[in-house]
Length: 375
Ligand code: SF4
Image 1 (cartoon, rainbow, N blue to C red):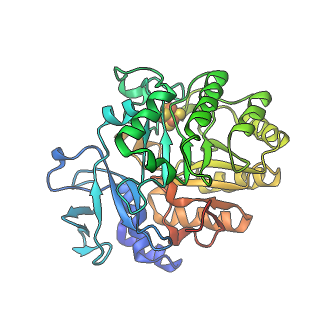
Image 2 (cartoon, helix red, strand yellow):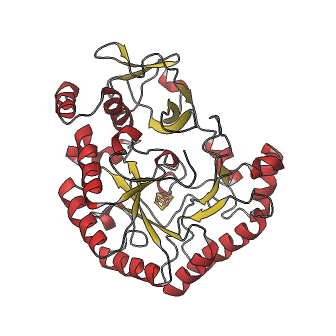
């Protein structure tokens, strides 16, 4: 990627320099003085200007110094070609994720833990066998099917997770949660998944505050009766489907997850029929061409099958993952084009700060942004 050329292009379409760097940091990663001391990804807490939250955590690949122009230098990030600081004088906080074993044996994380609203979101990930039937090439979970399995229980019981949260963070932490999201390795069975989240909601919600909402990425749920049951469990009347990409679906995901688009459309029709008012598609930008994206998103919108996107930038942590990035998606202008298409079609973007690899806020502010609480 020639950064100077890309910058000229992005400048012409009105992108500011900081937004340009935020995108390229996710695409190219961050290098460190001593890479061997750092894990393969880090959380970079980036100053956040559109919210009461002071920082928002972003998951960034750790790269060799010859793979990226970004270099971590104490409490700042340098853009090596110019030697300048990327975020001016604002302090950047970099922390490594907690160890994989600890994270996955707990069955939960607080992704905002190091920020000023540590208990904003509780993520529950109870299944960590390392053998997810999703088999996504882009998976960034350290225990994905590619990496073999961890020697832990295949399904962490609900009671164990609740007890661990209370032991580690105190019962009061649960009252401060804005939303609980179930984001897990797939269960491979609709009923087992639904039984689990039913028990989780019943038991966990004895502790949380009245305004806390419950959400689940429910790819295991694929029948109409399953969708009906799901609707009674989740809040917000919102159905979340992890579409990820419109093209190359079976190649980059398994048959179980990468179901053909016609089947996806049927599933979404059924979600509408059982009464979901909002359909959110989780989408990873950077795999489809812009032309394919525009074609399919218009089609889905025209058929009333999408209201908003949970949008993230495809972030590659391995050489194999880099290969599935669309060649044009190495340019920051790709992401601007995609957002412009969404603004034109009238599709909202959902809580951008809740995605570890979310879009920079300044880029998406031409779209309608949906927050579950005021930012
Ligand atoms: S479904 Fe999720 S956990 Fe499973 S392989 Fe795909 S991205 Fe990874």
